[in-house]
Every structure is written in structure tokens, then in C-alpha cells.
Length: 365
Image: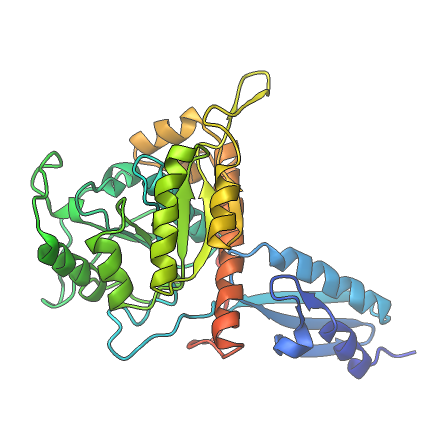
């Protein structure tokens, strides 16, 4: 019996997108199904190259095709990252998703998480920018191993620096001496942050990751008032002394109607040379913060000397040692975050089409 295109279309359409838990036919993400004898070819659109859903969907499509009588199915995956709501006065309208990485507590590793998370998303194929919004204590230039003066080609927009294929901006690029203190009052901080958002030529990005300073002060408030953020990522360490301040940042987001995409527990545990797990800073802090925030625990990052060493050397561990336990943890957190962005935007805005056409996943090293 010849392979029926209609029956195959129905079978493939019943495959469920694991991120949104909806069938592909409901999402209307199956494209260009062709049948040639007992073989077929189809294109499926997913919502983030950083999601771990691609292999799952491809496998399920092949299984469904075989159950329908096909001997082989060639599946091409394309991606169209969904976008936040962009107002007419948005300072960076071409950026699909703005994700601040924050915590009320200093010293929990926000910059480490922000840098490695940005690289994890980029290495998965997303277009990513990293904005160091910690005006008083910029550490992204050191962690990313990049210094220099941003230039303006047109006299209007500032060109961000680039490292590892990502666009990066920091107040640290503008200081004559990296040891120089930034002694600014609130209005100057607000003006600088507005310039970093509006006057920097970010271009088309899937994700702009922001490394926010500790606390719930001017930087966070200005950010949330000036543009629509997709949602925040909270960083904590396991102990209660960190959670006290993390709860305050969660409360700030809740009061300002900023979605919390998830919680990252950094320095979660230490594995010794024998593989024994030591919970140096206690346990359960990330889970308690996630419960308070009514958001998922995106992952736990181990305490690993490689993270510190490579961060000090200007190459975050995700780039320098991608197979290390810490890098793999950041990779998994990046995938879960991409899925959470998709889920959050569908919850807020439904399945509206993205602003630009889907694209194929680039091959990154």
C-alpha cells in the first residue's frame, strides 16, 4: 500500500511538543511535508535552538512515520524564538528577550552565572548579548577576557565589543583604570543604564543577559521601569544567609509584575577526588527560593575550582572546559531557561507568530 500523505500528516501532527505539551498540529509547526514512495520529508519549527526538545521531537516524528508505513523520514528543524512584548518606546526593540540575572545578595556568583549562561545559550545556536549592569562593580570584562573602548561608526550608536561571538557591554570598558571607583548618584546610574540599552547597537538578539548588581536599588528599578523584561533569573547559594536577601529580590519582582523564570543554586556542592559529594554551604536553599518565587529550580552548579580559574583567566568554564561538570550544569540550565522563556511567553501572549522568519541552527564550535 502506498504511503498516504494525509495519514502521515495526521500522525506527525499528533506528536507533542515537550516544552509546551501541545501537539504539533495545534501549534501549526509542521511545514513542507513531502512524500516520495515510502519515504517522506518534513520540516518542524521549534521555539528555541537552546532547547533540548529538538532530538526528542525528531525521534518521535520518525517513530510516528514508521508506524504509518514510512520506511524513512527526513526531519529538518528550524527555529523561531518567541519575543517579549515590545512597546514603541522600547530602548532595544530588536532584542527578543531581556533576562536579568539577579540576587539581593552579593557574592553568590551572579556574574559567573550570567557569563556562563550567556555562553551556554550562544553555543546552542542562539544570538546572545551580555550587558554588565553592575555599575559599581563591573566584573564581566575580567571574566570574559576583553578590554577596549567601544566605538561609534555613525556618531549615534555605540558598537558593543565582541568575544566568543557574543556582543558585550560594560561600564568597565569606559574606565581609564580598572581599579577606579565609580562614584555616581542615582540619576547618573540611571542615565548610564539607559544609554547601555538604547544607544548600544545590539542588533537582532534572541537573548540579552543582564548581570545586575546586588540589592533592589536604582539599577534594577530603572531597568524594570524602562523596558519590558521577559523574566528574571534568581541566583542563590544554599545557605540561609543568602536566602534572606534573595527573598527581597523575589518580592521586588512580584511587586513590579516581573516574571521569575527560575532559580539557579550556585556553589551547590563539592565533589572530591573520590566522587564523594560535600554540601559545604548546606542544602536546599535553591529549592526553598524556588518555592517562595513560585518558579522552577533551573539547576545546581557545583563548587569547582575550574570555574574560578577560567573566570579569572577570561574564558568562562562553558567555553574553556565544556565537558566539565560545572559547564554541563550551566548547559542544562541554559536549556531549561530557554524552555521557560518559551512557556512564559506562550502563557502571556499565546502562540502569536514571531517577528522574523524561522532560521536553521548554525554549527558552532
